[in-house]
Length: 274
Image (cartoon, rainbow, N blue to C red; front, side, top):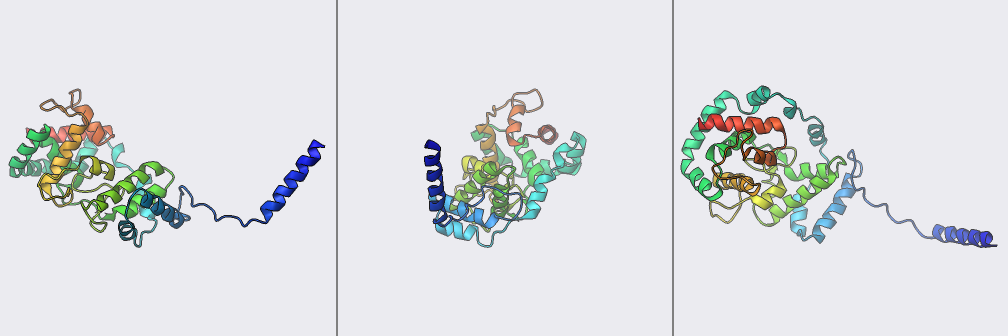
């Protein structure tokens, strides 16, 4: 009897369900191709609005944004950090960079001295990062940061990480540090002359020139001071060494996790200082 009753209940339940229209399918949480990106983006925008991002910022930032296959290609083919130290130095800190870096350090000596006094980071380290990341600001990348981050946030490989970066980028726009149109850079969403990720931009960018904006694209003072603030925030010890085995070398891992990058940065900074 119990079985028949249960069977009747199930039959009734299925009959009732058949009379209810099916709800629209939920937007995918991530995807490995462009299908579903538009639905995901609409859901993300709704969630961002709930977190306080204005409709004006959302509409402007995402106007015309589509899935970018090139960004996924870059993400899947990162060869630079598989190089030897010599190969990496030849690509990111070639000999002529040392001469140029020395000149940049000399021409910005007063600014770098003020930054060192406040944050405790040696000038040659900041100049080395500046040179290795963008050739002292000469090339910061030209991809739309919002489009790149939206693509990577939708991609399943590191969705949570890049969703946070995308939200952070919108917060930067909302607080007035830059517009969505100005926010262009490398494929992984790095911003400015030393290529800070958006979340780190929010946390460590400083207005060192006093103009009311934390501008890591146009303001050399803001760029170098913010880079120093990042290193200080990760435990940089004023006056301590930064070569392998010395106290500050470990802090370089916070800037870039690739061992070859850390070794190259320390070596480049040493050559600048010599």
